[in-house]
Image 1 (cartoon, rainbow, N blue to C red):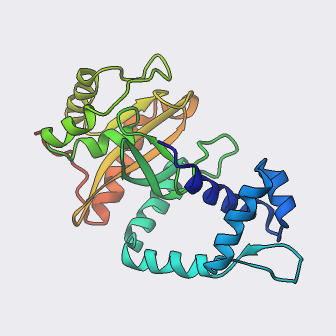
Image 2 (image 1 turned 180 degrees about the vertical axis):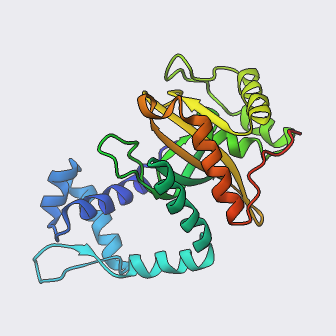
Length: 250
């Protein structure tokens, strides 16, 4: 479900992130194809709350430092430990592929930290990127850490959409993939959601948080290398004192 007012705030932030310059009401409305009245109301509300200001009188609006202050407070309350960021960097260097840490977000997983590959042809992802929890190795590495009851509560909400010939289209196919991963020692994917993308994931239990660690790249470069990538990930986790073994399925 999309809440239009919330989406508009995010779209406005993304607009300023792209342009990097103040913009008038007319420029914002034209760039985002918004009605002038809606633009006036939204900008006025954000100005009143201190989230937008005018660097120069009548020179256009721009986000205030309040956004950064709020984000820093949130980050301090729920930090991703430096050792996990360092782990992502190490694995990204050793595999040469995009490496990320993800967490559950509804029926998806969201990337909390990303180390993008330096190769010209790569999986391009960023913090905040989401992928379906059932149609991605990153998602299944989190599903596997849940109890059967917890997984069932997610399965009941899924709408099985076919993104490719390899997309899981039933609860049974997801559960089969989880059991296969348990025997194999890692979760893997092949173009299930994003065409020409192969991925390898391991569970990353940290405190009370069930995270997953994923390495992904083009099928042409990564599909046959998945066992080697998995071993690289496991060794790096073990060096950090983290358990790379897949949990038993409930």
